[in-house]
Amino acid sequence: MSTLIVEAKYVIPVRPRGKIIRDGSIVVEDDQIVFVGKRDEARRRFHSDTVIRAERHVVIPGLINAHNHLFQSILKNIGIDMELVSWLRTSIHPTLASFREEDFYVAAKWGLIENIKSGVTTLVENHYGPFGYDWVAKALIESKLKAVLARGIYELNVLLDILKEEPDKALSHVEYLVKKYHGYNNRLWIAVAPMHPYNASKELLLKAKELSDKYGILYHTHTAESKKDQELVVQLHGKTDVELLYELGILSPRYHAVHAVNVSPKEIKLLAKTGAHVIHNPESNMYLGSGIAPIPDYIENNVNVALGTDGAGSNNNNDMIEALRFAVFLHRAARSHPSIITAWDAIEMATINGARALGLEKQIGSLEPGKKADITIIRLDSPHTAPVTDPLGAIVYCANASDVDTVIVNGEIVMENRRVLVFDEEKVKEEAYRTQEEILDRAREKFGATFPYEKFII
Ligand SMILES: [Zn+2]
Image (cartoon, rainbow, N blue to C red):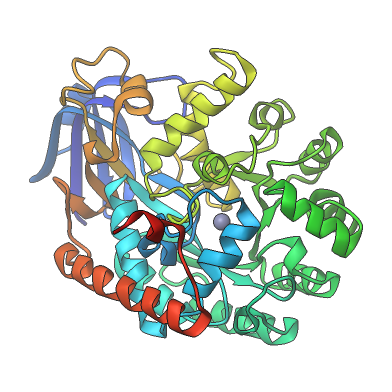
């Protein structure tokens, strides 16, 4: 058995809510937390040669990024100043269709490095289109993070035929992924993910639900994201997303309503009644002008709200520390209210609420004895954070991803003093530069793609 002790100026275990331990310690045996409390007590009871001393740091549960598209980590800013559907059709789809299989591996590694460097220990990776899944899974496994690979499916309303799939064929590929990876090492799980209801027939939406029930896998779908996608879904199905999904019997505690921005008060109640989860991506919603998700209303109605960055094509990064801040500021500005969402609400969205959405709340999401040792250590002695009064305020209102110092998953260090140990960052960076150039060239050649940024560059 190996023992790791983390001693820190502050520990925020998240459970119990609202408690911060000054001069705290966490003791880890193998992959499990066995003690969280005062340093003095830990020193009396436990001994180890491996002690991380985090004198000017705060320790939090590893962050859970509940919605991501890793391939977009090499597509930052390729489509600017557009609403969702135009952005997808002109910028994301032609580039996605120009990836070679192994390019997804490079992009996934690059995006995972950024996730790790912002303190993420678990993520939902919503890959989409017909290809690249085994390469993405390979990167996820190598990263040592915990991940749900949500297998995205486009059937309708997509301009490029190469991205469209027949429901039965796509769903049998989901089954292939379930059999190959679901539960792998207790770190990788598969979810089924029709992309948007306006991209799917009722047949696909219902068959995906059957698969979700058969294997007990999550159902992860962009839901009520923008005004335009709601117009398209009404044209196709005669109803907006949440009402449609409710009528089809798809909403459940395994359903992730990703975004859930443009909903009626009745639809908020339907999400609450069915136990569906909302995945909030404030920066993506702001960037694409999709609107403001009614997060305070979800919380008031006891809907579980988790937090994500969304893909770096619409964020435009994978920075969960920044996402914490926007998850607070957006709603305070929208409702002219200084505490409608608090720093405690935000940290819960990014930890325990994410764990609940993934069905992993018994294993992760807080620092408690018996849980897996997924731990993020953040340095707080920089000019923009120090001197510290409120350690959680320092994280949510002051810190940057670059303050994340060390990241531990299942008791194993994946980043130490900002050095990522699971990938060769410099090598992946060079691959990312080269791969992006090749993809954009191919998108121009094959699909006549043009990108808005090009007009600025002489
Ligand atoms: Zn998304």
